Image (cartoon, rainbow, N blue to C red; front, side, top):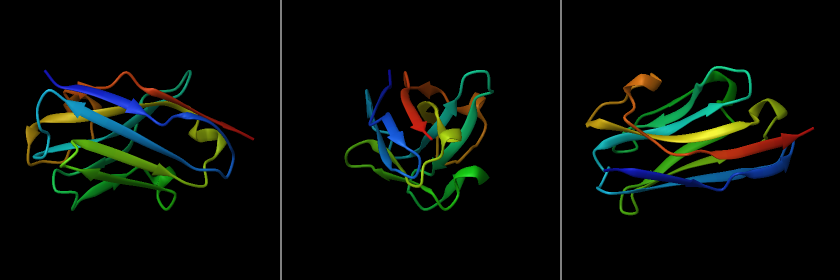
Length: 125
């Protein structure tokens, strides 16, 4: 059974930066897409960024393009999200995800099989 554990969330002022990490355990995910979704109070869960098994392909929601960067280290079974120029509207619980099906990159929440518990990111104005 795969477990995903996020870390790195916190409280930051607008314009600041945070780096989220998600460590996977249970089995290697070096052939599986991983990524991040987020959910703010009263809002639908939305994709933030996902990355292919090799790291060669990424997808970002429009609102974070140019500010966030997703990366992964397959040797450490870990995915990262570097968040710069944070805005109050980025405030949400950030959830790490992994796809059980290898060698593809999908962007729909229902297609991700493994989810972390989430880490809170709060951006003050």
